[in-house]
Length: 172
Picture 1 (cartoon, rainbow, N blue to C red):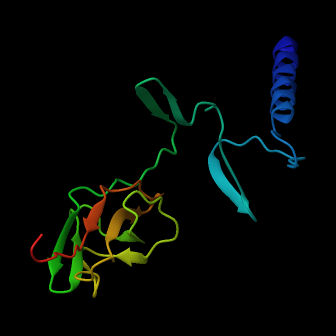
Picture 2: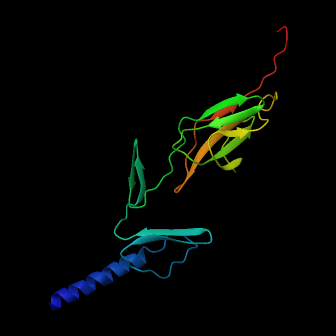
Picture 3: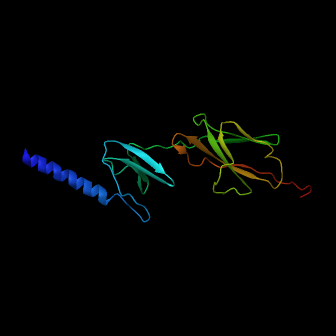
């Protein structure tokens, strides 16, 4: 019995030592306290967020070559918009997408079909969305990307959709 108590005490001290040794990574951070709990969670403050689950060192996305493994209890992604569609209705552009995405953010660029999305052009939109007056002006060509907005944040990019207007010169 005495050996079991001593072994248990040494095991706890060893685990505490490892958790303290690996509690801080990188410069400029200070994690001078810790707890050992039976669950997990997310703590946030300022520009930082700390997520943890005991006994699960591989939580997150692991990848190599053509394979990706999403491990852990916390795996959460928002599905990418499928079946995006664009139509012209008079001088308006209308975007639509599959019904599995209820709310989406719209990104738009003028005369740049290969743009990298920055700030959203329209937030929290539902399908069918209308960009009033976007069609029919020569020289103002718009490219759109739709990103689903769900419980796990924003999805990746949809296929690019474009509206292009060109002048036609008679006799050429």
